[in-house]
Image (cartoon, rainbow, N blue to C red):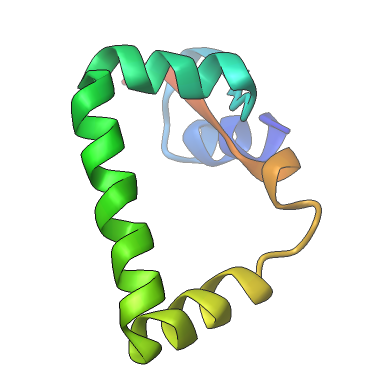
Length: 88
């Protein structure tokens, strides 16, 4: 997973490269963490507005259907991030 990035950084003349990949975990814990960060009230307000738009606005329903119908089932296995450090 990180080999391509390390090779790219090596070709950029970096040395002593340290690569640390992290997988994004789309679990219940992640969502609870978001609620704690933004407060339950803000999270509830956001979802209330989204549901309100969904039920009241045909254009928004069409937009949302198009957005989520094209997400592949394996989508979450490709989410993640990495921290790469090297010296020039």
